[in-house]
View (spheres, rainbow, N blue to C red):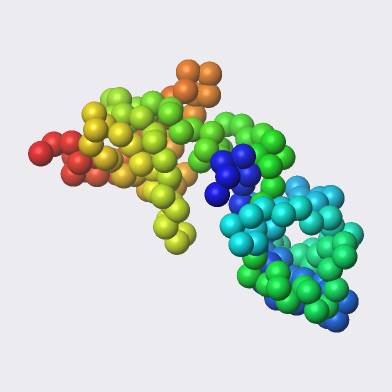
Length: 174
């Protein structure tokens, strides 16, 4: 996937007989996207732009969308396709909230162990994302849940964490 785009959601099923589709928005604040003009849909490893004619929410993270020039017949081809937007369209986050791509390369400092390495990636496993940290060529994995993140210092590129007792020891004290 192109690193200039972020995953927004997925087309789940048809709605009615006019080519409208249900979409699931995989975001904490889906209403921030209610005025979208277009999205990119991944088809055959390619991101193709689709103009939105109409978008209406049907729940917290579910909406019905009508794309320009998509009728009932060709809407079926889009079911299951993923939706993307350019990274530039991400709303800015503050405080301890961050996008995974934003903190790659940040130093990670644990409240007890001190500096434990550099964030190199996030592994998105089911509902439990994991932060990958490089500690002198050795991998440390920390669950990416709010309770473990104390503070994000964007200016100095540092993530301050409080890892569960013994978790870091599993990786570095051998």
